[in-house]
Image (cartoon, rainbow, N blue to C red; front, top):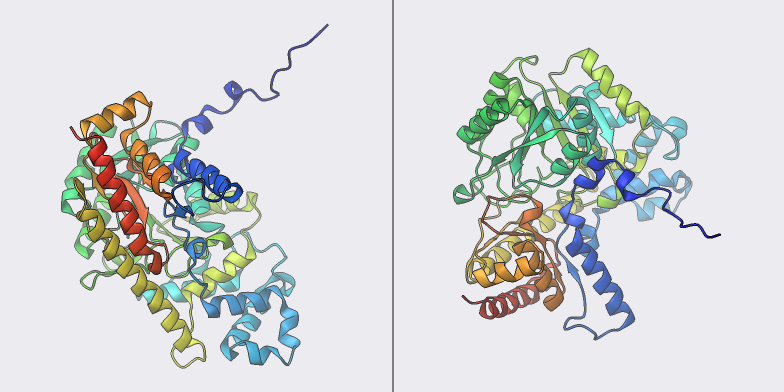
Length: 485
């Protein structure tokens, strides 16, 4: 007698929220790129290109960016404290890296990175971050309002878990948006309430659009709990003006919305007439502390440092009652604590070497070299896209991305339909197969219906940009010719 074996966990039985959520940055295009990379490794020369270039993901060190020396020196000493007892250490490490490592080690449980920390993070490290926030904003920060997390993503999940009770709770979210938000809102059972950024206005945020979306949500029985703002923007690269930020804060105050400020690209601003201003600074300069609730997210993965694999970040709470903060702390405690190496790097990023310290000159030169190069790469790619038929690309003011719009021919759109693909995904897949360049379809971030985009990072090594531009232009010309209406 034979039995038909069935899966222990059939896909039909899993949480439908898991099946419904999507994360385009590591979606099918990325998976196909991984398969092509394996093919190239097994059969060199099997494709019309010799390498896969991943500029789908904000992952700087994967594309050759070097770590900041001071950060890694301090981390190395903290990870292996025995180095502090060696006479050779003073020859290899700067004096301020040694003193900072000793200070950090004194705050760690058991003076070891291998021990659990407080669930909010090591108190001494939170104090260092609070000092850095105060220096940035000109207003004090309370270490007890800071939660160190395994990257900003973990903090976003924690707050959405707190705010969302059911599908009747909505979160205002920009479109285009970093798909973490749409995926997390889906996973936690809420409803994404989209507001569209204005592409014609360099991806500006228009308050009348927000009011219209709030009205729409309420008419449909959705209670909007919070508003996500990404500044500088991902995937769009805009940097909000101070006046626009003030409008957003006032809207959140009037409507009773929690402001979720994704500020992980705060160091990445490339145009002289723009500067990053934190939402905390906007709030503190004009409102009482209890008038507005805000959560600010920061990450060690972005900026000029790009420590993605270390998984560090934090959130700072502003304007939350103590009983609510107690609930957030309870959620943080379920995960015990974030990783200590990421916590250390978060403290260093918010408290880098100061003028007069031994490491400052090297630190400053490394930081400026990275940011200046990113600015040049952004401009080169922006100019390249704007020179291509049917493509328009807004200026990259900050962050790490461009989000060009592509006017696809009708024949290409029909070909995509026949292939059961979204048109911009069809374009991105064809680009990958022809050139080895990995982009993300704009449909993975959301876009105005009937428009098509792709998202690119500006992270490939500067020396490779001319070759990338050449590949892009040659492919695009061939694609447009093939599907010419």
